[in-house]
Length: 132
Image (cartoon, one colour):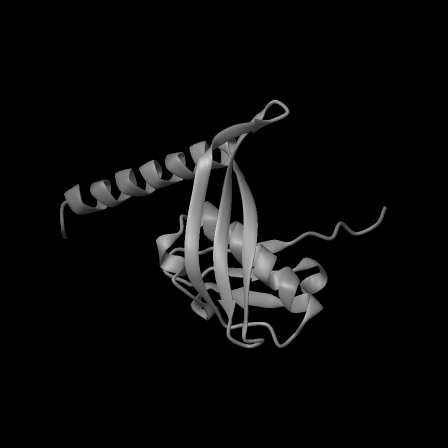
């Protein structure tokens, strides 16, 4: 049985998110992307993975700056509801402008909303817990 090669995301609370391309050829941290704080966690993951793949193709890629974010209405691709996004990016390393197109599924949005709700409940419990 062969080794499965996948992209990897490290997303730990309180630490910058980091994406590693397949085989660990390149990594990209959210600290390298100006304006990424305006994206949701799911959007960040998709974007960082794409930028890591781009860095594999050209090691001079990055750091980046988000210049524009456009979220389209929900549409269906087969039986899956998706929201297409276009993110305008300025690559300062290559002095180039380009767009990244992402498809975020409804399931990803639902999981993201559930994660946010869980985090908010945990934070509320910590605030309400008696201090020793």
